[in-house]
Image (tube, rainbow, N blue to C red):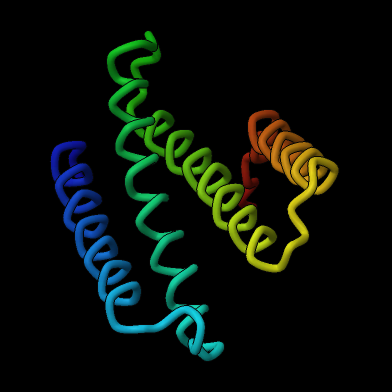
Length: 130
């Protein structure tokens, strides 16, 4: 898959997820929403944010970094988009449950930073075939 086809596919999927998010917001009443409506709301928002942040992060990495391996830029931007999107969606969920306090956000950010450090330092061992 080329970089251009990846960006086009990611953009199309992000637009589709955005319209799904708008449909959930339009068709479901948040005061009378059941569990399925809430799951659809948070999941469609998560997928939309992942797509937006992934595209923005990839474009920023293309223009502002000097690394020549494009697949590493794609992987890093997608992974960090997932972390940032999860941070936003979990924060919204905590806010809706009246559990959003600075300590929860601090520990959530700390957990994502530790995960990112782990993934940045993780090197896969080469497989030895006998």
